[in-house]
Image (tube, rainbow, N blue to C red):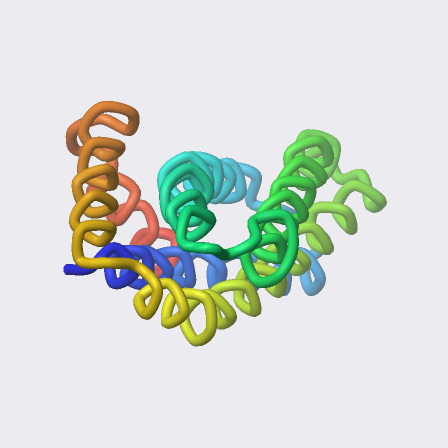
Amino acid sequence: MTPTEILKHEHQVILMVLGAAEREADSIASTGKVDADRVVKMLDFIRTFADKCHHAKEEDMLFVKMGERGFPTQMGPVGVMLQEHEMGRSYVRVVDEALEAAAGGDEAALTRVRDGLLSYAGLLRAHIQKEDTILYPMADQALTEQDQAELAEAFERVEREEIGAGVHEKYHQLAHELAEG
């Protein structure tokens, strides 16, 4: 699998959790209650799988390599992706900071959790679409075979050394649980 194919596969896993986040937001709107345990699991998935694993591969490896091949990293498509990663992190912080009060029934906090989940999901859905259909094809065109091999090896190293053995699989399972629940 090429590095961009690996990232696209990870996108499919992330999309499962985005669907779960949207359903939780709908549930908050209709019931006035939050399933805090479920949201905590979503936040764990987002922070560990989507951000520490997936976004780190993009930010620290793919985008750097694209920069070496002439893509500006502070503007243009790569710059936009980096800005959107930061926006996503801010939505996650809003949800995390409001969750305890929301679980206690605070209506304003419930609204912040709901809106944060919806904002994050909407942002990431559009973000993934742009990466899959615009940025990754550009990368595949610009990167050499050696670049592709180096990135694939670096992705494996991240999984093994930084994320840890079995962690990727654990989060795939969590994504399925959240999607089904």
